[in-house]
Amino acid sequence: MANISTAVILAVLMGPVVGTVASSAELLPPGAAWELVAERLSADNFLVLDVRTPGEFARGHLPLAVNLDFYRPDFEDRLAELDGDATYLVYCRSGARSARATRLMEALGFTKVYELRGGILAWEQAGLPVKTPDQPSFLLAPPYAALLLQVDPPGSLVVIDVRSPGEFATGYISGAINVDYYAPDFRVRISSLPREKAYLLYCRSGRRSAEAARIMRELGFALIFELEGGIVSWRQAGLPLER
Image (tube, rainbow, N blue to C red; front, side, top):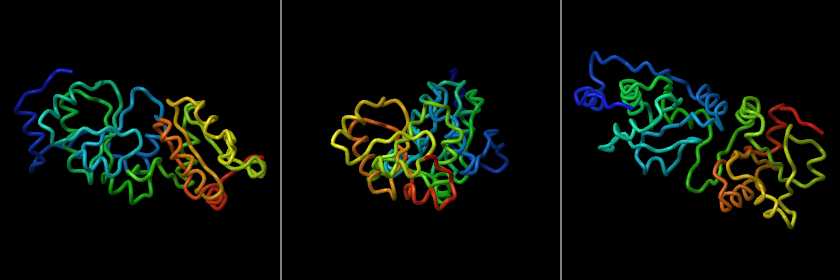
């Protein structure tokens, strides 16, 4: 992508100021932003851009997010290396840095840019998934898991029920495969799965799925979701099961 003038860069990085024209990037509230992420979970031309510092990013970040610190001296140069035809969801802590970043992206010629309204603070307040250092997966409340299952393209998300075969027979989430956490060959069966796919794990209440997620993280799986509260919370939310 072509560079823009130093004057424009400085105006964007130093702003906002009185009279500054806002970015044309569409502001998405957390729920709509999650729907965008869910729809594009395995898309090659979609990127979630976290413009906070590396320290902030390490404490917790959104699914699919990559970190590009707004305060880096080479921030504009690194932006210019990105695909201008891809779709982006940009966020920071509360919205100030992401607003400046999206204005800069607009000046650079990016056309498909969304901004998370209220930043990661609003995302967390909405109960949406954030990965932290002590959490190997993204915890999903039942309604958000249901949305993920509804919009995700067939085959790009694998749903794994880690309960026993007997528990599985009493009712399971549509499309789920049963890999018993307590089976002697559990690790072997998990190891045979493709690393590039996204996974949604669940058990009865969340304990076994949490342990399964840790094993998958150790094995190199990158994108793991867990159903918060397990099948118990799914039933309590009135969501459907198959038998």
